[in-house]
Length: 328
Image 1 (cartoon, helix red, strand yellow):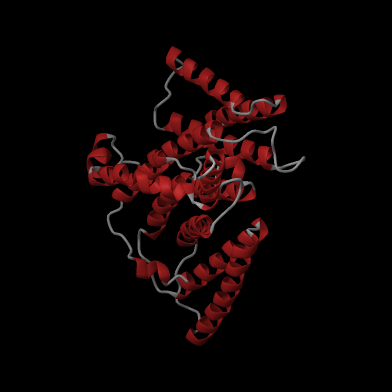
Image 2 (tube, helix red, strand yellow; image 1 turned 135 degrees about the horizontal axis):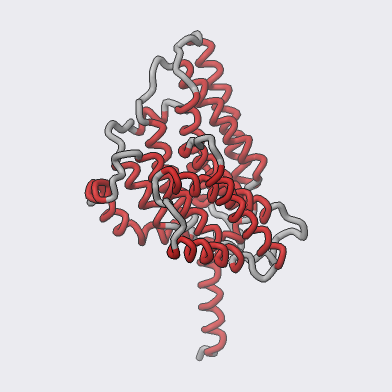
């Protein structure tokens, strides 16, 4: 009654259509939830075992930067099949790798992971160079670009004298990675053939919101000096601009619109924090932990999600959701 070839073709077509619109990162995140729940249950044991209570920011930031660099080298796309003939994406990836390896190398020295050159450390260094080169195959310029970025980052990190502030530096790099994912999603296997659903876009926006909250909570001081009526009018003005930017971003998926949307969120949060008399003490750390979990979900990197959970476990007093929503 039915032709086998027609049935097989129809089933394959249905599967492709489902894969085209399914948020794969979200599904993988759901499957990883039991593992993350175990990490959360035994988070205090992990924290005590690895000594994360002392110097938490540096240790969590170091491992996050290291695993993010490994992810970029191992799970990136093919430089020979770019969306545009001339693309800034390889250069920006090299910049991210340089920054991540610089901060990782500096923290390696400061935390005492590197005391003197040993055979094991030399082997890991060679393996890292080979990994950076093979990740840029099959283009010769990509191999040279990534090896140079990793090598220069390690040299600069070991030689630099100024102490890099790891939390804002890492948050800035994570935000840049999110922008790179938005620039060319198919290169990072985000969305099927670059097709982004509303869940993909909301995840990107939520990551941007967390990153902006880290910076605003860190660098804007509450003063309580804005007149209340002027504060209400300005806040509603920024809310209207934010709504328009949100609709425009959903419809265009444009990087400049995303940057404008994040800038509007930053101005709105800065206004709210400056007008308030105080903010929760650990709002910055909470936002950073949530950012790690969200970026880990977007990149399908459970290690980053686990590090975010461990960072969350080290926070003593936590702000509730209502206090975050007050920023908007």
